[in-house]
Amino acid sequence: MREDELATRVVDHYSAVHDDPDIRLEEPYDAAERRGVVDVYVRVRTPERVDHVIELKGDAAVRRATGANEVLRQYRRMERYFHADESHALRPKLGRTEPGARFLLCFAPTPTCVYHVATHRSLYGSVDPAARVEDVPAVRTVAFLTGLDGDPADLGMVSVNGDAPFGSEAFLRAVPDGSRLAESIRRVDDDVIESENGV
Image (cartoon, rainbow, N blue to C red):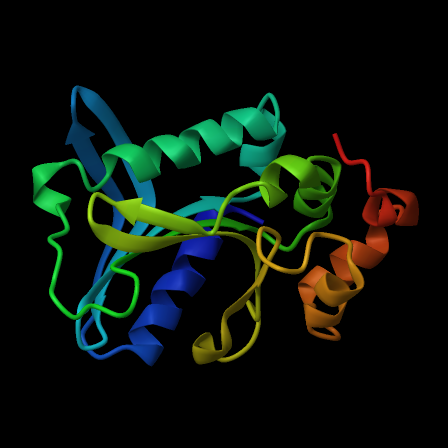
């Protein structure tokens, strides 16, 4: 599954569930002489501004990467410098109760990506969900996308860095029956899925 397919579904989802979201693909950032591009940047108002900064990984990206460390370095770089760029800066607001930014690392629900995450589960699972952009609370999520074939409003995620580690009973219960992710998990060797010692 290619990243442009994932991006199309993500864009369709935000358009379906939010009123007038500001959506940008391949959004560049430039801060402290660090330049980069995020796959999808979405600004929604709920009613306060919340930025969704999304890195998408399909089969080709996972195959090209030297490992999970390389993928996480790119993700951390995005988190560190995206809002440091003045054009994306977040400002603290009195009374804010929800995160002002969500940093998402989303994998395609394919056997290649399932195998990659399974064998590096300890690294992806170690990503702390709690984050900050200076004085603004934020959230980090590493997850598989689900619901890619249905209504765009039903696009979802199954996290691997929250309370249900990859391969755990809680994680497997969260995987929608009949989904691409469920099928991909079935196609990867059970020893890989159930291993508690991913490298």
